[in-house]
Amino acid sequence: MPSRPNPVSTWSEYFASMMDKPLHPIFRQLDPHLPANGEALELGAGVGHGVVHLIGKGLAVTAVDAEPDAIRILRERAPAATIVKGRFEEIDLPVDRYAVVVAGFSLFFLTADELKAFWPRIVGAMKPGGVFAGEFLGLNDDWVKVGYLGHSEPEVRQMFERFEILYWEEAERDGMTSQGTSKHWHVYHVIARLQPDTI
Image 1 (spheres, rainbow, N blue to C red):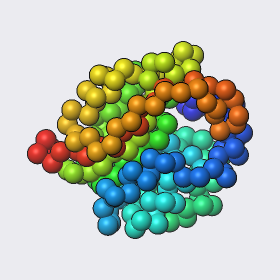
Image 2 (cartoon, rainbow, N blue to C red):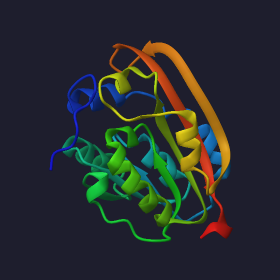
Image 3 (cartoon, rainbow, N blue to C red):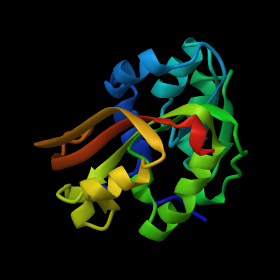
């Protein structure tokens, strides 16, 4: 089954535009909450900025992406990572495995029904006390208007009922994509810890 299209270009063009971009700022918020060791999962690893960063922090990283170009880049940039090619809803996730899960600007490629089925699998793959970091599109985001998955604030918060919120930012602004296309952004940036007593 093919991956879903990039909202503004081909995936090859998107990856080329991202190679020289800096690490996303959410990692500055995530770093104080990272364990000294353990396993991390990155969903939609792209060109591997986050994967390389997490490996540098001493974590064993599994990187997932559906795009052949991303897999090639990940193998070149992060040979120490375990690299999995596949769409999220098709991959196997072990239970109670990961101390860290990162899903940066990737979950909105799922449909509402797919995310409803996949989110419990993400939570189930996390160790008690594990940390999630990722983004969700808000309802005013331009990409939501063309069919990508968006959420209201209560919907996002409901997903994290079993978590302690460590960082929450709702950002809404006019800006640009990585390739210089004008875009209205509406994004929830979330870092949260799975509560041990809920397992």
